[in-house]
Image 1: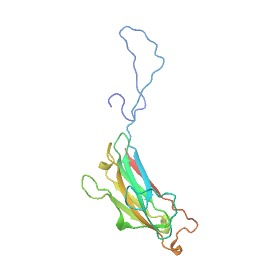
Image 2 (image 1 turned 30 degrees about the vertical axis):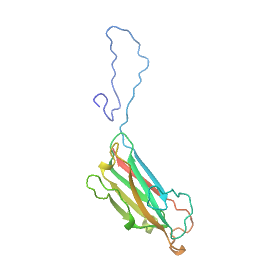
Image 3 (image 1 turned 90 degrees about the vertical axis):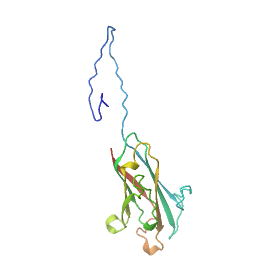
Image 4 (image 1 turned 30 degrees about the horizontal axis):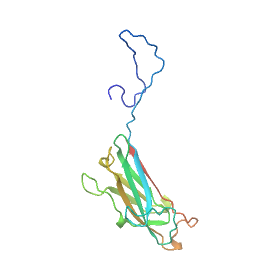
Length: 178
């Protein structure tokens, strides 16, 4: 913008007229904020089918397989840069890494890149996935993309990493710049 630029904190306003008299009492401005906003939604389903019912809050048994669906889309007014999605897996599940379903980068037609740190004492027995989202997938008006993770609840009590809970709490979040 050529009148008020991004990050400006002051503006000089000058009132002029060709002969009318006026008494400035109130001045109001409308400013459009240009910023990316990544909408990140994570659901738990019994299958990889995007139309399957959300099973959040239901009971699971030892050895059950679950599918985490992570959808992301830039719903903001500016493109996002250097976006990464971090998913901290629950303590008592194991990622079935061979069954990851990743969206393809539209420019290269290759799946998005990711790293996986399996659950160990150093990360409090929570596996961590970091997905590197290409800038061209988080631009204004881009479609929604989906990542699908297949996980298995540990198969017997001796494998429980947190025996004091029967809840499988999962979280994912996104970091990005503008």
